[in-house]
Image 1: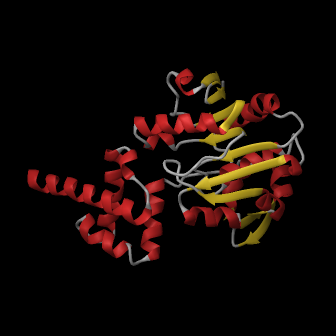
Image 2: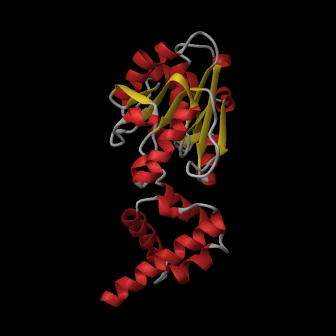
Image 3: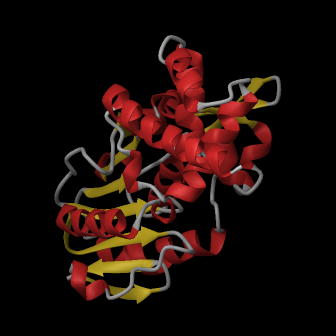
Length: 264
């Protein structure tokens, strides 16, 4: 048994090295127990007993690679997830940021697009679409393709009130809806690695929710510093419910509300 555990550990370390060389994604910045367990489960599900057997096959099969990236990036998203926090954002946070000029926001690790579309729909209650600039990024190109198309199961818009549903969504049949072209064209979707790619600058708002919990403390700290550099002084970082930033002043932030941090 001890030898089997040792071989699994060695296999994961081999996989991490090969995965980085192939994709440029460094899994050493992710918490190992959760990531190893998740990926080993996928490996076994596909009928392979080790990463050494599984990964060479993945490299030759685009669908298996996309499945692997999906499993790695935890693509879980929904419109108006945690509605009271979105209410806080639009009633208490955005009014202190919006000056009547262009409003720039970044939805980091946006998955399949529900978060940036939620943000845009809310912003349009306060400002014209011509004043809105939203960048939405994710490491997973497959998730970004879904976001760009903007087609979702009808049940996913249950939390959106009827006037907003009628204004921004069209029925596609087969229990599917599509967000209107004007909203899809207003958001720039782009592939981005939070750990290695350059960050945008001069932003009013960054939303990054339920992502940092999967990173090591060192990686989280590095990302928090880069988020601060990406924001204007006074800009806001909006994080997930389990992603409190301890000692925010060390990263040029101060907490102004639960889940909201202002750039000093």
